[in-house]
Length: 151
Image (cartoon, rainbow, N blue to C red; front, side, top):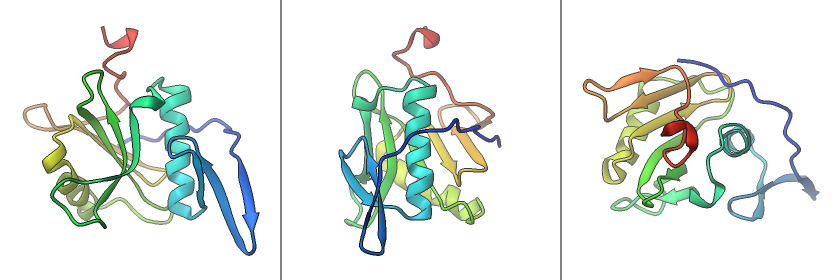
């Protein structure tokens, strides 16, 4: 378990009636600004701007193969071979991370077979290397496999 120290990101936020919207740089559109979306946007900006993960190899609200339309991973990061490398599940800040959250993301990952499973509520982060034997909890984000730091 670890926490990310989010720097101050500059988000594009707009109001439409009583609803607030935030611009999602991956989906390239405004989406409703919910507590979970606030965490998701911070994580996206962190992965891209701080950790150096390529935005062009990310998907948001990715439909999980073999599941109904309602089963979507919050963020999927792909490796240079376009294979799922990390699955990210974001929860609202007031939602504690529990075993059922881990089971949820493990279910999402079954058809994807990504190496890393990353869960956060914006305060606490769990990161699991599912390819380690036995699976290992990590205390920091790994470098993206196509970056200089991973070679």
